[in-house]
Image 1 (cartoon, rainbow, N blue to C red):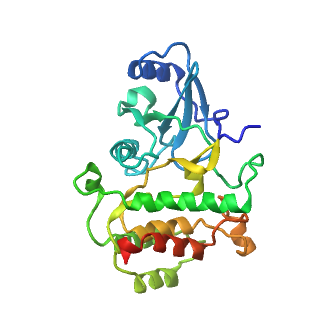
Image 2 (tube, rainbow, N blue to C red):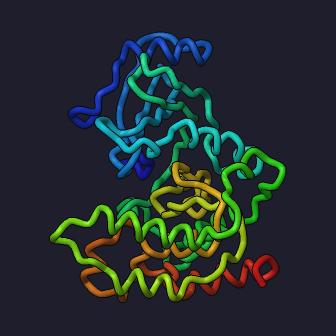
Length: 297
């Protein structure tokens, strides 16, 4: 069995119009012949990811979920534009090959990008991938290094600069998400008033304004199958923006379930941060700050 992340069958209700896919791809990419084979990746809790295969050529199509969605959510063209602007200075971004805003094609905006063939560490590492404790630590550091490298990307004077809304990112996040929770809370949900008050009281000032991923996790990176310690890709740029780097780090650590966490946290684990060799959350913070000492003081 291969350790490479592979597409499988399409989930019921999420099928694509094969004829429309064929026409669009052959119009946008020169030299494609025959009928496309369409499969779907099982991961992802937001946008849908498909593999489109013509002969021996594989491509990735990303589209929003089916059904009614919030007006500002799942902006596929925004994600594609971010990736296009970031690719020249952050090589781990897949190349965008085509975008489409014509809903007559698939009923939504979507984009096509190159396929990065590799290993995606999901809830558990592939059973066939046997890494020593030392190799696991090297992999962990390599993933964190990609977040650090992202935060050092220069955005001033580039199209990425337009993503920012200026100082006050931390305050906007805390007040915004608190307000959204209050407005959407159902009678059976906890009010979390003490949590929201604590966040408001302990809210720090912005440390800086950098490009942040906002969903940086192990299952959003692609590893080289020939050298699993090497990150060859970073995926899912839907929520990327200009903001505070420590908010990005903190968001990543919210998913970081380590080996000695309580059982209820282990039940929510969605990445292999519990295995021997992985850094603890405290060690991640120390490593991040040590590597960024010159930037953040």
